[in-house]
Image: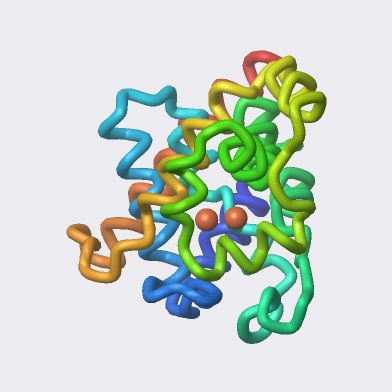
Length: 191
Ligand SMILES: [Fe+2]
Ligand SMILES: [Fe+2]
């Protein structure tokens, strides 16, 4: 468990400065902003961590450049969820797994949401299946972690501001490690 947490931290230490594909923030800034938005909203520790790590799949596969510009879906939500599940449990892995579907859901149900998506999110939406239809929306709403996935998705879309990074890099990574420990300990006691 500690080994995996060290690996996750190292991904952000070493790959955190990569520009978030197609956006004007780095992977670390985006992760940190999403985690902070969750924290400020009073989210549980598990949902804060899911928000922090929702795009870890991008770093895990270490794809170069902007996959959506190559017409490629990197399925980062599935990869991230698989990596996170054994260490932190479903309360972290499920919102991560569902955060792309949550975008499809929000585009299918809220007109204003679609109009505010970033250019990369619009490109990836096409690759990810486009807006959900009514039947898909109903099925998605029955997912146990539906509400958390939608919240995470909203923070995901807000967490792309180029100038917003109040912590030092060291403080941000230190906070991430503490949060991982907290959530992993709760998960261990629940197994
Ligand atoms: Fe993502
Ligand atoms: Fe994201």
